[in-house]
Image (cartoon, rainbow, N blue to C red):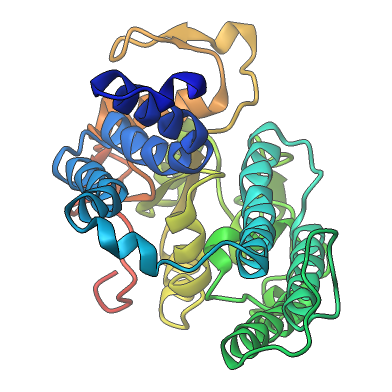
Length: 357
C-alpha cells in the first residue's frame, strides 16, 4: 500500500489513508477499543458516539487545515533532535502505561507477578530515568548533544521527578490517591502501614460466626477486600449470612481492570464516615466480573439471560448483575434487602462526592 501512495488521484489518497490507518492503529486502537467496549458492555450510545466523533475530528482536522492553507506547512518546525526527544518521552510514558494493562491481566488470572510494590518500583525506575533523560543525564543512541536545556524541558523534568518522589511513600502503603486508579489494589501490598492505621490489618477475608470466631469464606483465598474489610465473594453465601444476622447487604460489582473501582476504594471508602458504615452496618459482598478463575464443572451452566456458557467466576458474577439488576457497568453498588433480595434504594455507579454516596 505504501508504494501506491505516490500515485495521483483518488487511488493515491485512498492508499495514503490506508497506510495512515495501519501505522497509527497501535495508538488509536486503545482509544477506539475503550469506546467500543463501553458501548458493548454498558449499552451507552451517546457517550461512545461523541467519543468516536471527537476522535475522528481531531485526527482529520490537521489534514483539513493544511489542505485549506497549504502555505502553513512551511512554518512547521523541521524534524531533528527535538522530535527524537518527543519520541523517547512518549516511549517512557507508553512503557509505564503498558504495565497497567499487564497488571490487569495478572490480576484477572491470579499470576501474582505484579503486586503493588513491584508495580511502584518499576514506575519509580521508569519515571526516574525519564527525568534524568530530560535533564540530559541519560543519552540514547540517536540523541543530539545537549549544550543546555531550555526552560520548558526543565519544568517538565521537575514535574516528572516530583511525580517520581511522590510515588516513593507508596512502597510503605501510602494510598497515592491521585494515581490509585492506575495502581494494583492496595490489598496486594505485603508491607502496608496505611491499612494498619485504619485498625484493619488483617489480610485474610473472614466472616464472624455466631460464636464470635472467624471462618474462611468462599474464594477468600484468591480475593481480598480493600482496607481490611471483611467481605464475601460469593453472592449466595453473602446473602445467606446477611439473612442469618439480619443485616442489609452492600453488593459491590467490581473488576480487576476497573479504574473507577480502584479510585472509589482509595478516595471514598477510607473516609471516616464511610468506612465504619460499611464495616458495621452492612454485609459486604464483592463480586469481580472479569475474574478468569474456572468454576468447578458442576457449577458451570448456560445463562438463561445471555445464552452464553458461564465457566468462570467473572462470568458468573457478570451474569448475576445482568440478570438480576439489568446492568453491566462497574462499579455498581446495590443496597439489598436479604429477605426479599430486592434493592432498598436505587443502585449507583461511581460517586466521588462522599455526602451523596
